[in-house]
Length: 254
Ligand code: 0WD
Image (cartoon, rainbow, N blue to C red; front, top):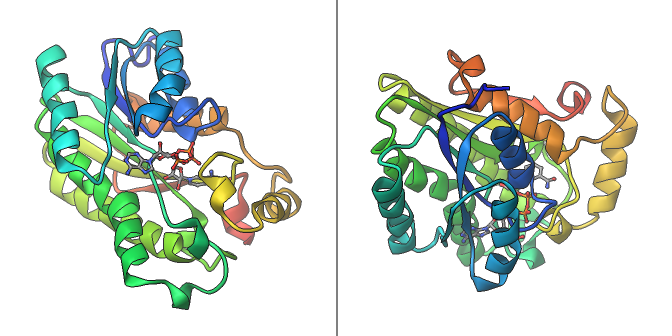
């Protein structure tokens, strides 16, 4: 379909072909969007380059969100190459694996600040830069998890960071709404990705969702991609400040 025809978007957070960002990228490209990708560090470049090529993306840029200069460089390139931007997908999070088990209360200040910076503040930092290129309005989507709303085993500091991320979605929706820029989050059910493998007992969490979600199964990156397409495209034209659950309904029973 031509749903995304003429739209240009930045996809951040592809680590490999199991990444949620990749599911979203495929859906957007299939609907006609032109994409740019960022990758974190040289080791991921090797994985992201061929994926970007599969979708005909020419811009594949390094970006570490803990480094302001590297974020600036991405948006300078986008301004030079495209002159405008229609959407951004932020699928980035990080916490020290050693603290994604045991008790939240034991979290160190260093890990707390790093997790908040990478998993929450980076979306705001990206939004600041993206806003300047969204001349015809735009759509920003980030990824969150139910651990922001309820205590989930081992999610710990990431749950606190996701709660802050969801609040930042609401504040940015207000700030940017008058410029026709929409800001939303997708709260995805658990999916086995690189980031998820850092969470203690993740297989148990997957099984728990499979047994208890209304749909009695987990979700795929392609399904998250389809839902993201609604928020990124004009189908979601009047939707902002929303945390949209794509979790087989788990949030109504969990
Ligand atoms: O069950 C899941 N997998 C869920 C994930 C359920 C609900 C939400 N999410 C969220 C995650 O918290 C994250 O925000 O979805 C987003 C994407 O995560 P993912 O697709 O599960 O994981 P992955 O494929 O690993 O991509 C996340 C990537 C990083 O990968 P690794 O595993 O190498 O940390 O985020 C990127 C990196 O590529 N990333 C960074 N990018 C730029 N600068 C940074 C950084 N400092 N740190 C991590």
